Image 1 (cartoon, rainbow, N blue to C red):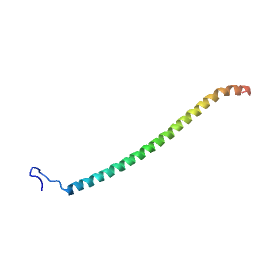
Image 2 (image 1 turned 180 degrees about the vertical axis):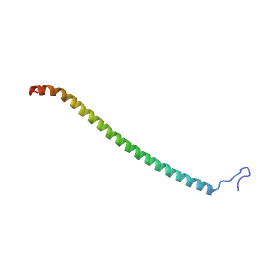
Image 3 (image 1 turned 90 degrees about the vertical axis):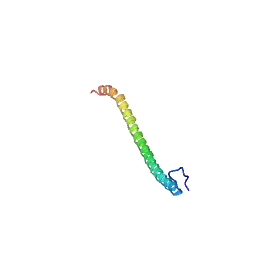
Image 4 (image 1 turned 180 degrees about the horizontal axis):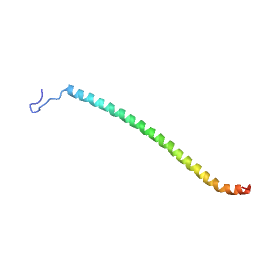
Length: 80
């Protein structure tokens, strides 16, 4: 029952097969998105851990820098 001007007819079977293919592709995209989201969260966790270490090291360096000048007078007081 296709119209005489059309070169091809699209059947319900064709539409059904296309919808099934699109669902399969959509499932693949959703899976990839879930994986990408998990990877992003993992990277953010790792970056935060590195930032904590950097700030801890900076604090330790500041504490050492504050203590070192005090060692000279303390050593002189004890006859060193």
